[in-house]
Image 1: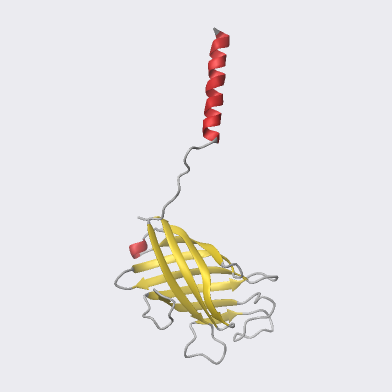
Image 2: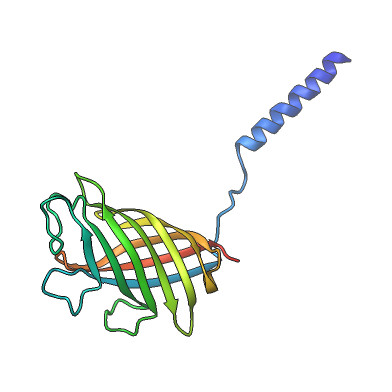
Length: 185
């Protein structure tokens, strides 16, 4: 009788272990909200004060604040207040502002650390979306975290896939931001 109980218990635990080792259907997460927006960054270069939306506020010793540092811009910190549009045209009506900073933090490749918010104020969207993460600039598409928001985006979290949609030298770049929210309140 004891041997039979042991066999039944052993069979039960083997069945339990095998059934959990091979899940039948993985849950595919589906976003609860999805946005695609563009932001346009025009960095101040000493000649474009009227159009600039970003400026270098810290640079390595000996560098100036109008030209990005050599060697992958390591040590530069820039702040920005960029227009956000629904399409890739800089002259389209803005739906908000991208406000924050990026820090060039690697000596051997183009990489920056981003911390910024989208402050949206349009008829479609009201509130802010907060982003943070590493931006390996040379990779075509990269993900950063959506860590929260306010207004229409209260406590939203998710992933923003960004790619450099266009750039002109070291003065202008446009980012396409594909935002997928997985937690919506």
